[in-house]
Every structure is written in structure tokens, then in C-alpha cells.
Length: 51
Image 1 (cartoon, rainbow, N blue to C red):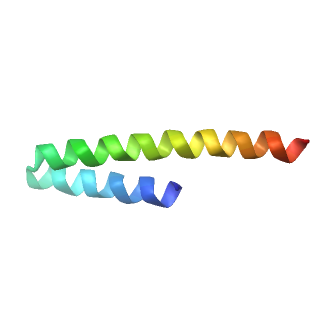
Image 2: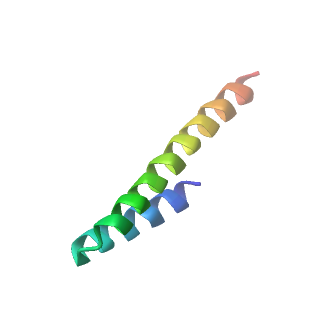
């Protein structure tokens, strides 16, 4: 999941540099969603691992 986040961040940066604002915004939005899903799953796995 973290790998997808990094991929979309890189796509957003490249699209932003090249002037594709809509694509950069979309990729950044997807990266945010993937990152928050990753954080939730990570915290849940930490909690389950302690039990």
C-alpha cells in the first residue's frame, strides 16, 4: 500500500512540473487516500499483534 502511495506522489510531482494540474491533483488525492488506508491498516495490525 505504501508503494502505491509513493508511486502516485511521484506521478503527481511529474504531472505538476509538466503543467498538468488536473492530473496532478487527482494523483495527489489518490496518494492521500492510499496513505490514510495504509496508516489505518498499520495501526490495526499493531493492535492485533499485541493481543
